[in-house]
Image (cartoon, rainbow, N blue to C red; front, top):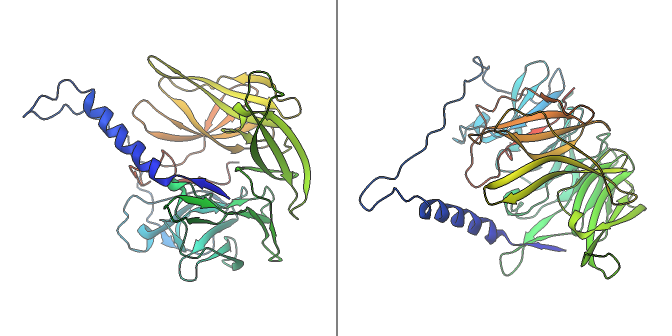
Length: 359
């Protein structure tokens, strides 16, 4: 089981607010502090109001947590946008919970509140498949360290990792489970530090251990690929500094990691580095062709072996989603309209958006 301090997330927010107050020398006693306003971004041409839809005629491109948040149908549930322009809200998919979409945009998975059971919705037919996995008391949420469900690359299996609070109100992640969606079979994996993601060989997880055999490193990261049936099929070891911020390619032969460096002037970005899993060595670094002031915030997943789906942010902290071509460094926006996405102050940028079909 893995413990995650949820209190530290709130503490980090408090520290950030405190730092902003301290470094504002112009906010004198009795005076209103200076406010820096970011320009309003142009809204997309009148998008249709989301309707209550259980099935969709075309694959879903992305889902988002709506900005309205007033408790009504479309404001209380995840909203979906399809390649054909349909905009619907998915009944039962509470906007306060996690949502997963298959990469082809035809399936959604979420925790159903009324019976605390994970379910998978076929977005083409509207069929709902309850899974034999319950999260009693609900999930603590991703902001406090919960692992959201993850579809396998073919959409046939789902990674679920239950969570709970211990006596000290710390988040504890239980052993990961792989669920066969159509058959309902559940395969429980050994305890691990972190789920990395799916490859075409199975689910990749990582566990860190102390080591004396890697010069310059006090820990090493043991990566294991488990088949959908829960069998260990491959392992490899990398230096401990590569434990986090890595995303596996479909083949599992390459990991991708954003490269950031803290400098006296802020955070410098050096693109995305690809790492060979057989040797643990960087293969090359791709410099993305982003406009001035924009940077990659997170790698969402791979799109095939030659492109990455990424979240990026601009000079005014606006958020975008792009496909990064690893051969050219070119960036193609996926067309996600962020104007209606909830701007939740305690959530990392882009947490309220889930990307599916980008073709």
